[in-house]
Length: 307
Image (tube, rainbow, N blue to C red; front, side, top):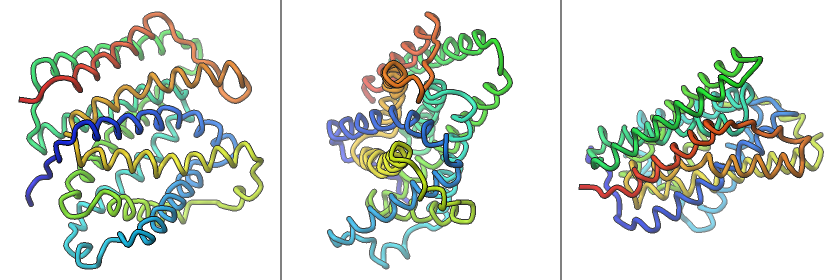
């Protein structure tokens, strides 16, 4: 099977990547609030179900549903990998978020686009320049500083924090595998069709574990957060999938690694005005330096010119 190549419209790819960054940056806050009243399986099932329904209606109205002929030629094994690994990613991330905090979870999950970028070097024969490798080194140092300081300043619940970080690390690995499979599927189907199949497949996978009855009794705040999470799924992943059409996976991954800055700012703002919803993050100076290094390293990777 020939490997997918980008369209070369890098400005559009960059813009779509930034949309994804913003939506993923504020998502942990909404998820944290939603998990106060619903279990992880129900939240995940609802997000996928709503995304599948809305995208199906949209594609049907535009007569862009995947034709049967293309579905038959789609490699089912690759599609199954994308569905299963994205489903695992969602559950592991939510479980890890429950054990840590929005900022910690969002910083660590940025390993996912880094791993996707490294996978792009191997699978899609993309190339990093010396500047990009230096950026990756800076990013790695930033990760080390951030989590060393976070762990050192926890007086209690260090074990819980480490378990949460472990879950999110494996979530990052599963997301990178999903993303690389999804990029290769672009050879056979447009991004919107791929996401429709993935959303539907994931909704089916989580149906046996979901408990939808409590959704009917949610107050306006929690219902609004749940709906936002669902809409966030379809818009953010749609933008991400489309960005891979126009930009290299390694470059997209570098931009996505800047997501923690959006989360840190959002958590600070929400905890200031609504302290009962989200606890404020307690970052030390070294922790902030680590986060800045993560962002700086990702920018160096994104701006490094390919050979």
